[in-house]
Image (tube, helix red, strand yellow):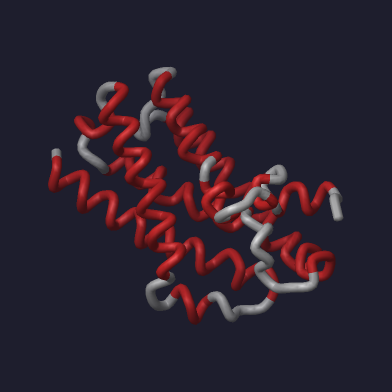
Length: 168
């Protein structure tokens, strides 16, 4: 079923793509971040924080508000096509890059590697779901759907910051 709410919950339909819908739903934030970096607005710039922060807030709020609707329409909590939570969670390691060494974002190739690393770190932590992500996932409504991905985002942010400081 296609409704505007499901379109948002599926991150504009990306959650309907196969295989790995969560991976598809995680792609918009790093793509937006890369375009911002190419335009000269890196992770320490106000515009970068406003744009990535807006994506984060919009998808967090949407996931909480529309979680029950998606569950009712799709007949399952955290249905595979609902990827708004992945979109929100992916923003966390991207925002954390403000504390990474500047050298990892200087130039096309280092920026691409760093943003790609943030993407992969989030996907890894989202799939593995280290504690307490698995337990948090059991919370009711959109809260459980969202918060496990935010925990994964925090783990990914820590991983990205450790690695960038080691390689810089």
